[in-house]
Image 1 (cartoon, rainbow, N blue to C red):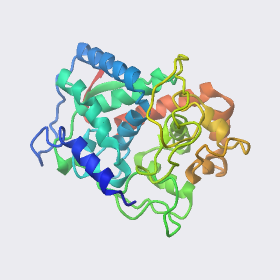
Image 2 (cartoon, rainbow, N blue to C red; image 1 turned 90 degrees about the horizontal axis):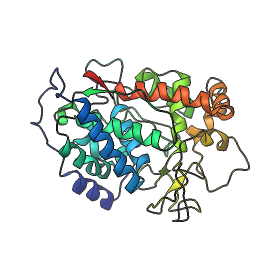
Image 3 (cartoon, rainbow, N blue to C red; image 1 turned 180 degrees about the horizontal axis):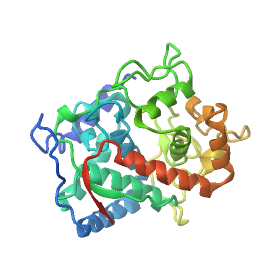
Length: 327
């Protein structure tokens, strides 16, 4: 995907504060920082305050996912949930457009609690975003060891596409292993099987599209704005009205609430045409391996939440080296 000069410039400016917190090219240490339960509680309270003020939960989820989602179970020492996304070149990969700003928003949390790793902060922000939006509580463990420089960055090409490229193919030959496929279901399996997920996990994690928006200048998909993202009223799970910057396309009408409405909307032919339905969304109800899980999550939100919580926890720990601390 080609990014505009403005997007690349914005990413570079937003990254200045966190591009080199430690010497470049130094291997990750074998022990974590001495994070305490009180640090974790303080950081959580601070993150909750940011979420309440900015309604930025969806971008925090995307940040954490893109950090951990580069993991390859077949590559020793693979990148993953280690905070490497804050470094160049990874932060400037095409799939990570817009995420430099998310890292910058969380920088004050690191400054206030320096014994917490960036990796922990990113994953905590994601889990809290899900829970505070009405989703399940994730059984998180903390104490992750941070990547220390660009040498720890994942190669570009490990993250999933929503639609096929100009040649009719999803993914590409890059990354740690090719994700290229002519079908959306084949592409999803190449991406997520590489991380160690099965079909249930793929469908459950896809359900997080119930939360947030897609932007053309970030993922290459989405409208400039829709009737659901044009600044008109959006409510949070507590019923309060949410302030937000207009723009993008959402998969669901109430895109700041985490529920199973993604699974009720995608197969609904009468759903509003301004809602986003990518090929990798629709394949969940077409592919025989994915379909039973998608239909179950459509009909049973509790079942979705149970599967999602397990998959999210697993994703948040991929490639991590840590001394576990629970909150």
